[in-house]
Image (cartoon, rainbow, N blue to C red; front, side, top):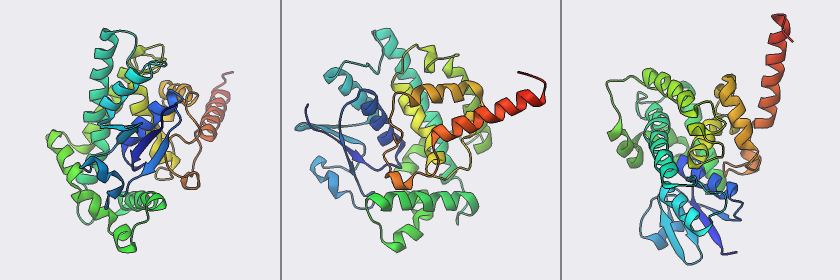
Length: 274
């Protein structure tokens, strides 16, 4: 097997997306953490963009292009379906993930008044702790992480694609509805019978905050269709598929699934169900 290395930071949704694709294809790889403040680990690329995937002596960038590359080299467990028509549909949904689902999380940070307060500041510090657990950050950098996120060039670039006539809450509500619509009754996104790139772009984005302790509960698991989808996708991935050190994990998806099932059973009993 050719040596495979994935370079990036685990707080990046695009890095986690590629990681899940590698796990799904059962390709052994080394995750090489990159310090976002000092990306010397990827100096060999001549740029600072992550993820970077290196296979043997060749490297490439851009998460969707990397998934295509993986399918070319390792066609088992395809990420783009079985036909060109499949691929075109998957790419449309993948674009929605990037420009709606992922963009909404960046907007939540960008649109928060300076100085950031409350829950978002706590989340930003938690992200700093995760980054520092793999590429140590100076104390002053960790303390300033909320402000660093708000002024990050990458996030500013992403915000160029935002429709500011839609409020943050309106955007979240719309995306929540679209998420269920795009599942198309499953079992996988797009109504597909096998996982695709879209599933591995969405899964780590939905579960990351809960697994690392930023969120108190896995909110999407309260929607039965999404809870069942999460359980299906989790079967294809290791317990820790989000590229953070094991000691940074706070919540388990297995525990959440069991707790949700228990709550549903209690609710059925309370309403006289069975």
